[in-house]
Image 1 (tube, rainbow, N blue to C red):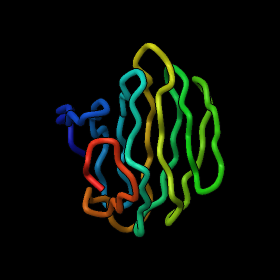
Image 2 (cartoon, helix red, strand yellow; image 1 turned 90 degrees about the vertical axis):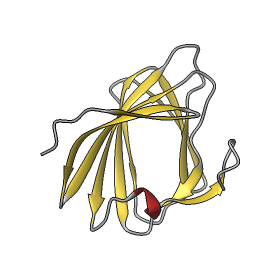
Image 3 (spheres, rainbow, N blue to C red; image 1 turned 120 degrees about the vertical axis):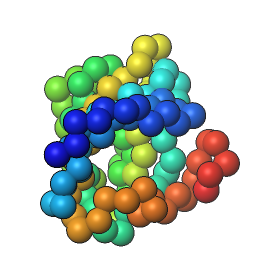
Length: 117
């Protein structure tokens, strides 16, 4: 298990990889106020998001869910999804990835606020 908790900064916030193993990957993700991640999907992994702090607006296929601290949502493999922080402070969540591949190149961006789609 890697103990390197280097932050990977993005336009929407940043994340730290807490665990990167052959059967799972765990990230702690911070989303800045008013920002959202790409509308995306993954072909080779599912995700479980557990909200630590703040409020999240989660898009999962045709649903829009509002989650608060201590609430969670599952993102099945192939589901179109994104998370947004509607609040005025940083939002934090834990993402647990399961599947057979966890590389960043398994992100299929459908829509992106930062021109990455």
